[in-house]
Image 1 (spheres, rainbow, N blue to C red):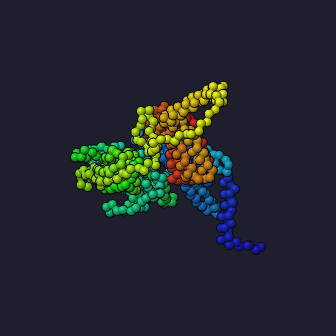
Image 2: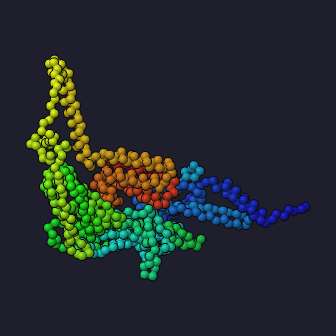
Image 3: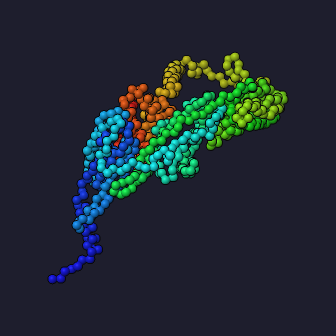
Length: 599
């Protein structure tokens, strides 16, 4: 009998194909497990990991009292083994959530997560975690990765940098919130844990380029990548030592971790950093020797113009002032001077044009002076007094003096007098001695008059009723417009509905980042309108305090914070499943309906 010899290479290929076919036949069901610590300390951060044998989609579970920090971070691993000619292949898909333990001890349970695979829904086991003080038990999984490297404060730190440390009152200061990072540390998912507050200052935010700007710099013997997170110009409104509270941020860092199987791997880990308390010394302005002050602090130049120099009675001249320089130019008072009594003054019209740094630019004033009497008139110089921060003293700038020649009018134009008669009606002179006299009369028979007939009384009564109706409606409109708070609350529902419709449209178009952004704007804007808050005052702490004053249930407040955090993390790490985004939208809609009944 002849035996056919099969080449070894073909045999191996057949074995691999057979193993793949076997996997396709038997790996039809989804199995997954959950890994988390048995116990954690109060406020401790930890990971909750779901592992699948197939590439399924997961719906984020309800974390309850645990603080959601970020995730899920997705990972995939696979291995193939050949034992006694049998080929085994296995795939693992992981979803990692980053959580923080609540502030009180106790036993807490995280419900099972739901996963979808081939149109079937699977549910994992619930996770019970004990929250203790000062004691941390071993994690539930054996051979867990070691703690991430590269998160020390010398490799990542936050600073609030001021271009000046000692200034005068109202002198502008530029403040930059910068994050220093070693070049090999990759960062993403920036979020403010505490909203930057600057009490005691007027604040002007500088326009930032799209995306976060960065540059490399050397500090000591180390090179850092410096990220400019925020840049503002501050105008101190009180003297003395002013302290700016620390600012806290949270980012995700891509760091290397040791793994018992692969040796080393990379994963994203949330890292918090806080700036130091910053001190600014503000000096009081010295005594002003001048009787008047514009409130200006900085360095300025002043010029003026007058056009035309010769006019007729009831014509106007335009007097312009242009103040340029660097300082608190936006907050300078109007520059006023004295015009001759024969002129009627309109203005000034004020226009501010600032440069990108918000502390230099141009301030323009325009006066309109109407001549009422003929003659030659002098316009005295205007004076502008300010505190010069370079010379550290008050200076006064003066414009040129001007002369205006006013001629008699030609008598053909209409003259509008500036005075008012005793009856409260403006006096109008036509420039003629005798008005036009009508030479022909148009008389009608007595019975042809409309007055005294039935239609006259009906029209009169109808007009009176219509006038009263219009008066009542108008007063109600004025009352509603005057009550800005009530008007804003009344429109909150329509505004949020419009934004939710826009968010749903973005979701259908699969514009994920814009969808999360619009959903977050809808929630923030709704609360701002309902609770009469300025957009600049919106922060997690302020909203929680406002909700408490309105006696809103704590569960609604927590639902709001959870949706906001989800939107913020999703914008920086998109990739959520459509079912998850649709569920978040529905949750936001239900939350707004509940809040509408409370606020």
